[in-house]
Image (cartoon, rainbow, N blue to C red):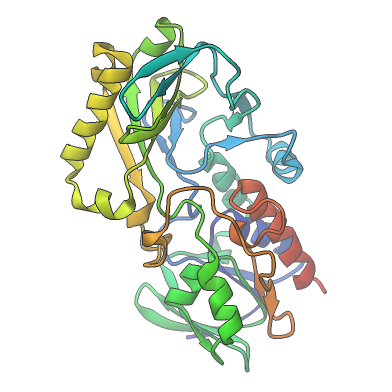
Length: 358
């Protein structure tokens, strides 16, 4: 099967969806996504009966005063915001197991979250696109310069999409590992893409769900920093409507080590830590959810698995358009200023949109 579209966008995360939404009124756009869902690393899980009772498995926080693009988009899509809960003392656990509770300003005093979870951002953008503009389960296998075209497998069937321009809204390492470029990328570009860490690729979040916020009753904010682990950071992740309460945590064990642990054993280790930090009440969970992004084949590459779980630094000399601006990069990893944030996904998308309209 062959189709022609003015703009072919690869990757239906925030950057790809936003690019498609901004262009579809003026251009014939097709958005290809390898997985069975949109959103990429933005994913929320709704556990209660209400659509606003959701917790974030991916990025959760935003800072309106520092992220003007994201703030404008949230306003335009008429989404709600609520402030991150930071009232109470913060716990610090040293590597020698000494536990301290201290009062002081939280690093998240100015952090906000989207009502109903960050997934609401994705749902709102997707709802504003025609259904025919998005092709899920469409895995791109190669991109050809002349004639400009994309080869993909849509639910196992081969498709060719030709276009005037292609927007590659994928992490560079994912594109390099999974897509054949014809002609091949130069050694310089290939090396730059390898050096560009994939945001969140080796992160693992574990969410503990409760019917009562026992930490608040202890005058604790839920915020924890631990050098002992296995959880290195913990925050209050409760939804705005407080239909249930949650502690959102980051598992500090390296990805390769996590992969060797059975889920049951990992949960046991983490619950033991919560018992050290908070006491018996922390064991009364009504649900436990884990999202290990390092096990997501659409997010993580073999190179990423051997990197440290921290906020990456991104190459300043990364080329953002190739083939005489017919192949254009987008995504949080290629943002010039806000790499590794939702704002960066929109920043790079704005640049891609401008190039598409030239």
